[in-house]
Length: 115
Length: 117
Image (tube, rainbow over all chains, first blue to last red; front, side, top):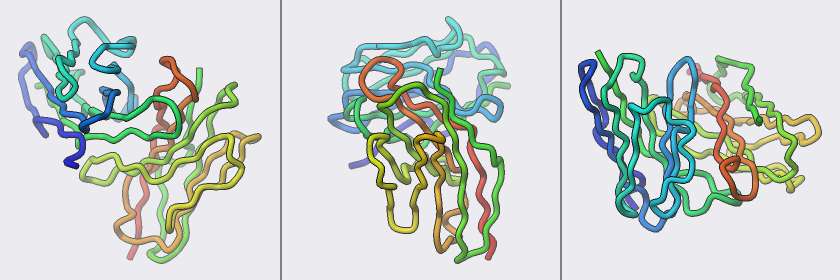
């Protein structure tokens, strides 16, 4: 099992550019989560999917953020246009079920720097 | 809304000694789960230990154990025989039982643990 795979590991972009972060969840997991980690706000849930369907996107900060999950093995988080305050580490996590004591399995994260 | 508080931004322990990291949470729910995650410099979030609220017995995973005090809403992590590889950020997390959006993981701000050789 390769775990949750995120790409790229690092991304540096200029303000105003479009950024796309990618995630491949663990095979068979039916929940996928996108988190953002900053020093000021810690770990925040942005959006989560169940069986490829977005369930709760209330954590998405602005319309500049969008997420898709076209199939069970791939998800993207897009920021367009990017701003310096979007600089953070973005984590993808997957889970077999949402109930019970199942923890999430996290990817290694993408460190985004917007200059 | 549920909240998780880690009151110790930083902690330090001597190698081979024992250290306890504190976590308190606020919830009106009776069915929930608690977790400790470790984040080393590699950035990977690693699940260390988990606890079901309905279980009175404290969870244990090798050198890691918890002290779960449900009435006090306290969930501390004890690391015994500390090793250099234990140095990391440690996050306490809460998840409401059952379905719905409230079942998402809510994290504390973390405690940075340093291990001195």
